[in-house]
Image 1 (cartoon, rainbow, N blue to C red):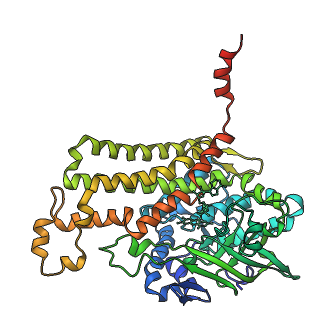
Image 2 (cartoon, rainbow, N blue to C red):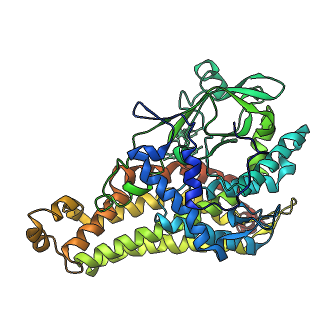
Image 3 (cartoon, rainbow, N blue to C red):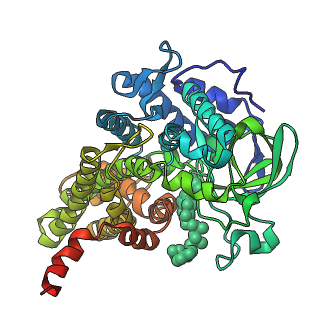
Length: 488
Ligand SMILES: Cc1cc2nc3c(=O)[nH]c(=O)nc-3n(C[C@H](O)[C@H](O)[C@H](O)COP(=O)(O)OP(=O)(O)OC[C@H]3O[C@@H](n4cnc5c(N)ncnc54)[C@H](O)[C@@H]3O)c2cc1C
């Protein structure tokens, strides 16, 4: 087990330093029956690892916007997404850094490390919430861990949901309490945990696994109320991946799948020892809810998530616009209307981000929190908008997505036929095919389908979130407007 005290902090890592971390091995990643210790050694994981390395390199290429001195050691530059925001300017700067990373994949990689950097910065900023009901040590552990994660520039994955055994029952009652992650033992130096969680996106490319609350639990289910962090290469920790959508594909044929399959995995804890200095919450079922509701997490994570989603919507708009111009269908007003709807989504997302930053307030813990109202509204809509943008892309491109020979065909004896018969008004055959293949990888390939599912569910579902929006909404003005007509 990696120790927090003995490893030298590097500050913001380069891509090569990140890859060195993967090469250290010791992981138990399972993919189609194969055990993989180092993702770089496997053809289905190799290219996504290189894309992740770009995420680390880009912070050095944009150092002026993305790096600041570490509060612990000013000689160490750290990524700004690790910074606990204290002013609205901190939020604006953080958004820019998130945008730069999201742009690398057209917003298709949702779980780049900035996602959890933002989460843990907000948790550490509100350590007082974690410390409630005598959990001062857990809160101190969390603050120390966030500093470690920040100064070592870790790549992290997280798994919040228990498996779908029977959603009618409480987690502790499902499968006789054996499946959901729970504590089974405790020694002087560690707690021992067993069970499973889903879905650890990025697991093959992460240094550490973070576990924190994903739903409320009952007062009697204290052994399920856990939050901690451990290295991926911890004994007893196993990750079972879905199929790879990368499969070492040619980047011409599958420009997104070949590079940006961030992978999803179920994680199994086979009596895993969690050192006590890595435990942030153990048994406090009230705290299990409060560390989500009272730390401002919702506003912070949606700041990251909707910056990335805004980038993805821009990418979708670019694809639709360029396809429509390539084939000339842009002249039809219903095509323009569909493109206009995607643009509306882009602009409303940008407006929500700007409004959330403009309305930001410093909370009682001294953390600057985005105004969460525009985000709560967007939280209900974004899981519908991105699938709708995909639908519009299909309607704009029509059968063109199937008129897409591969690079092998372009390099083969039919090249002249392809140049003639696959041309379009706005692009020669090669460019047209390339554009359609890119858009199909966005909406219709296995990775495209996974991307749509991701947008529907990665922050819970749209229906429950919209119901929550209504529940927590301030109804003072709506009621007053009606009430004036009900009075004498
Ligand atoms: C591609 C992808 C990547 C993901 N990555 C991560 C990750 O990195 N880390 C992580 O922790 N999680 C991740 N998730 C998991 C995500 O958090 C969950 O999918 C999400 O919270 C929904 O939970 P579920 O999948 O268990 O679905 P379920 O909760 O089983 O829901 C299935 C259906 O039942 C409905 N339903 C379930 N319970 C209720 C209820 N109480 N009331 C009303 N309706 C209900 C839902 O609305 C939905 O329609 C990922 C999911 C996807 C699809």
